[in-house]
Image (cartoon, rainbow, N blue to C red):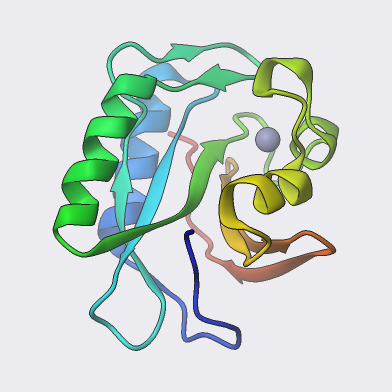
Length: 162
Ligand SMILES: [Zn+2]
């Protein structure tokens, strides 16, 4: 079972993570894209320190995106072997200045197996909580999601707009 340490955290999102998200987004703008966030097991504070792109077989549409599952599986295995822990996904909302979770993000939809953030936390993280980062045109925001709560825990002033 994937497990995060409990809040409060000293959350650090590295410049490299931000730049990777910008680069991936600019490749397909104005379409959506997404990827995965990892932290090292060997630091005390939860720092989101690695960011994996969607993979070459990912697909991108105006309001949704699908990752390359094989690519993600390979990366997760490789990173877990090196002591990194998957903490949740990132995705983009091109055209939205300050990103907010959409109805689909919160309630789920058929294409993602019908899971919204909270139910997905129960399914994938055993209800222990996970991160969701959304990048908008003017800023990026991160939420901590548990089965019964969604809390905004981080934002910057760097967006994806070219
Ligand atoms: Zn969204």
